[in-house]
Image 1 (tube, rainbow, N blue to C red):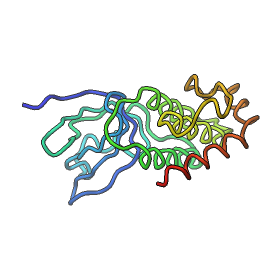
Image 2 (image 1 turned 180 degrees about the vertical axis):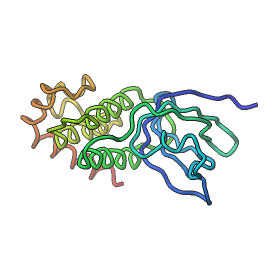
Image 3 (image 1 turned 30 degrees about the horizontal axis):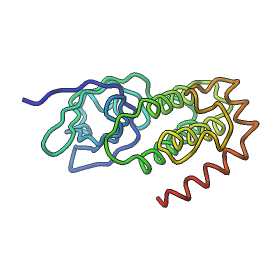
Image 4 (image 1 turned 90 degrees about the horizontal axis):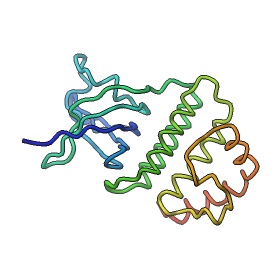
Length: 190
């Protein structure tokens, strides 16, 4: 008998597989980046299909089998309900994270960065989505070791919040942060 694991996850993307299945890319609190097969999730009678939409936040149940992870259940915590620009912003962050993170490894800081960015972008009154994206990408690169906090001389990496004062600090250092991000992404060769 296989053990069932329950964890919070952000849905970073998916790809269709077969007639009704889908491989879902999740960034989980307990396991890091996981690609899980969701059987029959594309069929009309699936109870999980609305909870596991792209860029949603969900409580998931996963089973580790011989051929990898399987999605055994899901409950939506927060769907992708924001402006089109904010959802597109989170989609770009998700794509970058999927490109840079390899293998399953718990990373509490990275999960908090992505979860807080998701929360900040899926509000009704987001004005600084571009700045939130820059800060989130810088934090993702910092969490993965591609960016040094000393290089930017900022306190943005000591926490994961995206409050008004943090956005203002990032606006003041926008050019330096963008330059560091571009250099770090170029050095990854991905």
